[in-house]
Length: 406
Image (cartoon, rainbow, N blue to C red):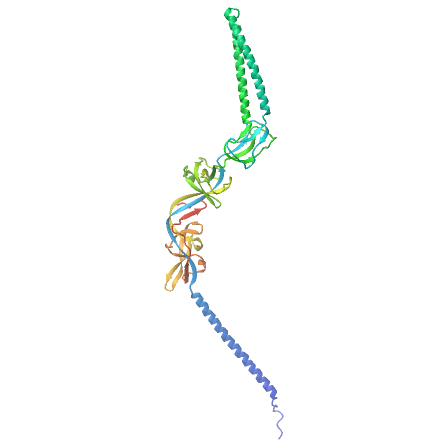
């Protein structure tokens, strides 16, 4: 019997197998994707669990104990200059031709050493001239004495008048006065000869040489500069109140670079410098000094004073700016879960180096968190590690200028 024409023919066997294989592959891909998603979600949950565990663990911090003090030793530093006690420009009182300069810059000389000499030929000629006048007056004086003696004899015999006798006597007196005048001129030339030789007035060092042989110098023109090196001084400008408090003989510490030495107050000037509004204080450096002192170098004079100031020393690194002029810092506090971070409010009294003197809610001996406090929130668990602390007796404060008024 023949089948109807509208019934479709059965699909080929190869096509059925291809469709079945494709379906199986799709199912495998879907299953793999689902499995991967499950694994990824599990990994995320696991990582979140680890993060929560790490966040809950204490944060290691470095701490330092706050130290209470009742008195502090305040040090203020003031600029000063090293200068010699004596400095002079060596010059000839009378001008002339420089014949010899015996020293160079940097030479050390003793008191009385000859430094320079003027040409003495003019003075030698003047001395010869005066000696001739002196010899001439001596001859005239001898003649005047003989004449006076004769006039005296004639007057006694009645052959000469008193007028002739008085003239002879006064002539001898005039010649004697002229003779003394010549001797005074010779003494003046001797003074000029001595002044034509320049000698060191004190022991020191030649700082400058301003004239050489052959130069004609005017009276008072500087030829050499001499400084006294054995008595260095420090000239420091202090505020008027501090300068008035200094007493002669008080020993202060002077800092020059890395070198320190002592100096005693020798004088306090009574006037105030109109430019700096300070009073000059002179200090004699107490010798010997191991450090080499260079004149003109800038130094610092340290003034120390005991001052009542109740507060606690804390590290500057622990401070954070707060509100209304206050500062905050984090300290370690005990809780049921262990040490936690707790904020404290303080007022900064003064700062010295890496320390700050504060007062406020901070207690003596509190463990202040030094570093990383800005990353902490109140109540966060911490693991404190005490850092190196200063000795409680170390209450020295170094300030660049005057401390805050009480």
